Length: 144
Image (cartoon, rainbow, N blue to C red; front, top):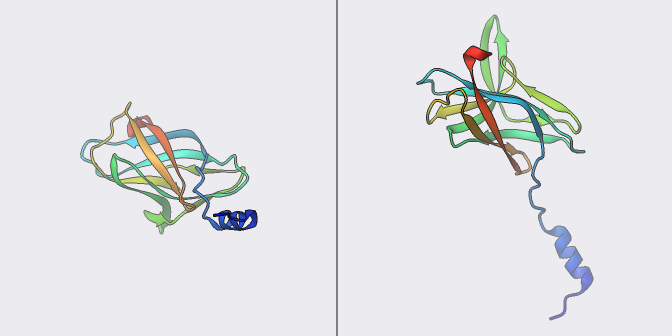
């Protein structure tokens, strides 16, 4: 069976492209270490996007937690509340800071409380279906 070159190129052009690994650079990242028995904690970091296209972070996963979600802290009449964010855009050539009191990653339903000095593997998930594994140290809340 002979397939014409034009037909082959047309089929390849229509095939879905595989997800490209988001190559963000992580700076000053850590997971907040809390007292034993606490069921949730947070991860903080600066995410740099050296690429030419914006990257949209939609959440994550971790073996250490039941779920990893994006949250932001807002002040409503003097009371701080956390709200779920569906995504955070990291602009091409730009950065986004995930920090205490602002946008951050929440590690929910911890399977055990991470201790200072340990490391937690987190998989960042992006809107285009790609993912990126990061490994963050645990820093005691007392050291912040």
